[in-house]
Image (tube, protein in one colour):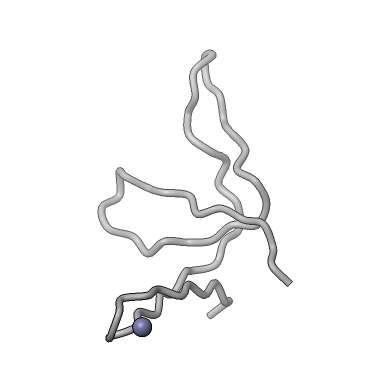
Length: 63
Ligand SMILES: [Zn+2]
């Protein structure tokens, strides 16, 4: 079964491992402006790459 989720991006803390979060992203607004999306519980995303063709498979399993 495939479950809807999203992968929030962080740009201010340097390099971080991508994470998968259940459900659709919820926008946070501050003073009428977008202030990113709501942080929620998430699991790290692991990417496997085919060494022949570069095809990627992503897994979001709890550690
Ligand atoms: Zn391949």
